[in-house]
Length: 420
Image (cartoon, rainbow, N blue to C red; front, side, top):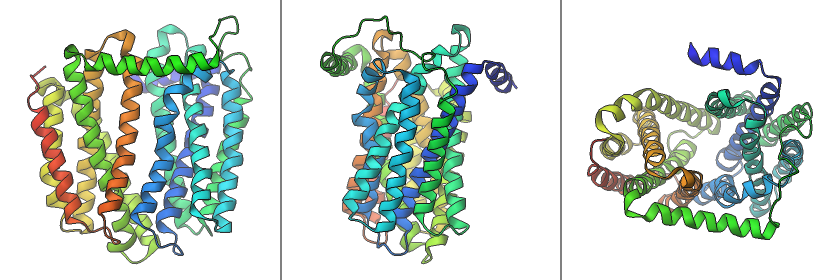
């Protein structure tokens, strides 16, 4: 297979191997830590979880990506990236250990969330540092391949870490704090792996003149606004419409995920371990839908164009979400999880295609920063709306009908796209 051949070729490069090891350990630890937080908030037997608590947890996990992400590059251009990977992972190991202690001590929720927020904020710098360092360990001819395979491997590592957290928790870990400590140990391993990289290898070059920090941060904010203005121009109408549609679909996915969490905790089973296992199964089925979208979308976009494929995805969700969700039964909900994984990821791939092909190259990075902010802010906003609408057991006909109506509106808007 071409992918295996490309990966084997990249692994011959010592610098790439070492950087990839840091990525796999760091993102594997992220998966463990995030699932540990979710199970502590939702599935702790001693806690009476509310949808508001779920929304707070999602805000902790995602807001740093929206608020810190656009400005992370400014600081990464001033700090040695190898040191960012080293000290970032060490700091996360320390902070995650602190989170575990807070779980054991049963402190007020705000203190627990503050600790988790610090861990995920540092995460943004580590991920950005890994991406910025890649051109320093791979030559130009292999950079495209490396940019494709390295983040994909990191995503798989995060998924594996989440699966490991589920397994450890279900096989008898005494507490979620023990799982968090497992994540802290993996962060520490990531820091030790970073020590194998020479301090100056990952850059940035010290010879480059950099503006003062305040000027650089202000410039980053101006660049984001310039990206928004570029997107608002009539010539980029298709890209703006796609981003708006994807933001609404992400909102719907987030609201339904909060509902699923509450259903697994209270309505579908009375046993917390069984509910946790059911949640893991549902997320796995949704991941299978993501994989199916990766296989199906290129063919569908070739026949329909990206806009109409997004319309088809939204229309499918608008019909099947109420059909499968309103019975509030395990089998139909698992089928709905697959459908949502397929339609959400299919729409995202189409949106990426429209944005990449519609905006000027000089603005593309800034547009994707805006995209990242919208993507995560929609998820957090959805969690807040769901928290206001959901009853304690998660059964809400109103939420399902509302989400189906939003999907229908997106489908109607995207159906006006020309076939491209």
